[in-house]
Image 1 (tube, rainbow, N blue to C red):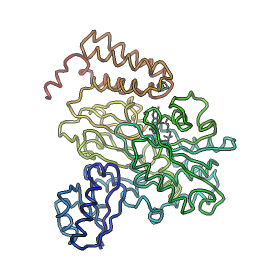
Image 2: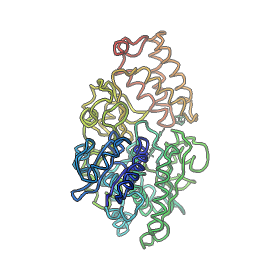
Image 3: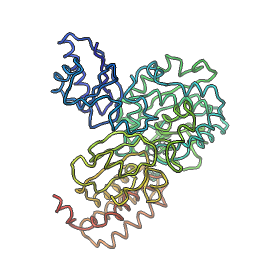
Image 4: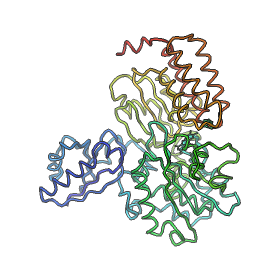
Length: 517
Ligand SMILES: Cc1cc2nc3c(=O)[nH]c(=O)nc-3n(C[C@H](O)[C@H](O)[C@H](O)COP(=O)(O)O)c2cc1C
Ligand code: SF4
């Protein structure tokens, strides 16, 4: 029998994975070969999708990217385990994968995301098992000493957040998973929810046990229908297996989960506005304090963490805090699932210990631009992240190192631009994005962003450039220091970094661009 593994990941489906599956099934019928196709998550080598893996005695052999026209010859090659132009060799030996340190994504692309048994066969639920043998204080000690910091953007220590909720006195507490993933160039939350949903469930369950919460919600953006299906299926499977619901795993603890789907606002990723949305209201940012850890969902103490933060927990509990903290640099411990996107040759998910330089990630791992032109700028950390020029490519991937250069790593997304980019246009886009996505609660963001668009337009039209540049700078300062949340407060980062590092683009008729065309 021929056993194949083909991703059911949204990115793989978008480039034809479902059609390839259908064609392979037809080919098998035609040749009278019995075939089993297991739909996995993606390994994260997006430029090689759809990737097909053949089970062999030596391990899984990969082929990709597989187009419909390749199927007949591929089927013949796989039947005889012979050569083929798309053959990439043993999956585990592919250098792009081998160079990674996959702690959070260890199972993604390997297991069947619908099977609790497969998850368990790959060390799944070992973290929960250990957590059930510990006291909440012992779990907190592990999470704290692992050095894990929130992967949603702010990098806040997860152990401290959990302890605050654990210490709070209340009749009910909640766990909320932030799967709104609105940052440009990011897709790690989606990938793990589609490829290894049980790791998110396990992490949230451990959080529930630790802080004394019996109910959790996963707030997923509506643009992720495949992730919604995968998470709902995994929740149902975990319930059937007695791993969600009352007396989980035969213990005295109860924990239940529900998926909620957002309605498509970037600001609903901001934790307090997400809570408003979960409660059925418009996504308006709440003033802090009170912190969600004290008064969160329905006014109760709430742990709200990013998908990747929860997904890192099972490894920490299973292997010990030290095993996680041994990776990384400075105060950035463990690994970061970095997402390479934009105009890049080898786009995808690369999980590695903190500390690799931006240049290594873009040039070496990413292979430079897709267009083959020189890299001119990269935006790290989503639409509120700074633009870095080549001169800053020696910056190590680390929260503090980026902050020291007026940047942020955010959710780990890197978007690459070649030398045809117009950075004044990008600065305008940052202001426009803020104007469109502003929740409207505070003036610096609501009005400042619109004035920002108008002023940058004037600069681009060559109107009183020096004066208008000063106005943009002034607006940025007002937004940075006067906004209620980071949407208005961080929009100055892309704007000011574009101005600082690419000043030559601000003015009428950028001659550099005409030369590049
Ligand atoms: C405008 C805005 C959008 C945000 N979007 C997200 C998001 O999509 N996903 C996320 O996890 N955090 C997002 N955050 C950060 C959250 O407010 C919060 O810090 C995070 O969910 C906490 O989880 P963590 O500690 O695990 O990172 C956003 C923040 C702001 C200001
Ligand atoms: S900064 Fe913008 S998004 Fe944040 S509260 Fe103010 S208006 Fe709302």
